[in-house]
Amino acid sequence: MSYPIASVGTEYADRLKSIGIRTTATLLDRAKTPKGRKSLAAASGIAEPKILRFANMADLMRLRGVGEEYAELLEAAGVDTVKELKNRNVANLTRALAEANARDNLVRLLPSEKMVAKWISQAKSMPPMMTY
Image (cartoon, rainbow, N blue to C red; front, side):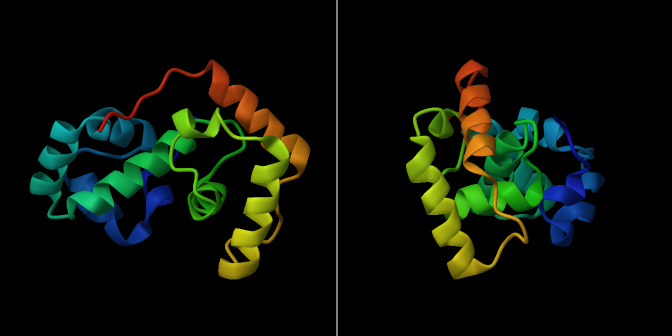
């Protein structure tokens, strides 16, 4: 899935748009490698760690049903990328998501265990995008 670039951080959307990044898919394509992230940081004036965070969120947003809020929740529970998600246990991750949300209050509706299972299943069939 691809979302408007504002989905990964409205505070920085204008800077990213000014360098031709209008969707999460474009961001992920251009920021999937360390060299790409360095180039985007230089062009946008956004720090590399922030570019990496946005790219990781865009990676998670490839999953059906995962938008900005769920990507942030997954990150808060320790899952940064699709590659990392495919190795998670459904019950443990569902519990970690609930704990992260109780701590950080990120979403109004927690994903069900069934939804988390679907995300993990999707992740297993997706090629990894991010390199470090």
